[in-house]
Length: 80
Image (cartoon, rainbow, N blue to C red; front, side):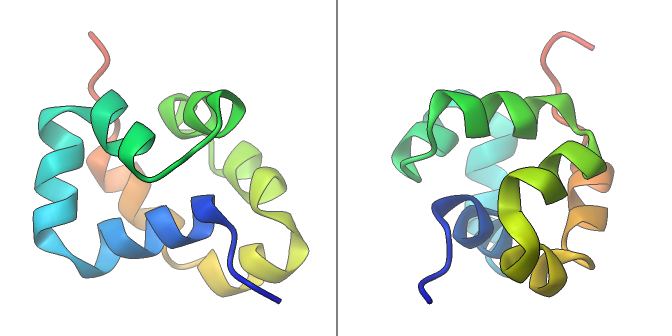
């Protein structure tokens, strides 16, 4: 089974410092470039680990569990 776009996006943020910098500088553009749906974007913006895991689904969530910690460290900066 192919990885979801959301999982691939989170993996790239974790593995590629350039992608992470792009995301930190312009989260909306980075998520759009990754092909995330509006629903996926909202889940990422929430920073809610449980929502992210639900959105990923069981297979990707099992693989991504350690990667969500990185999202916590990034804590999307949408005026917060």
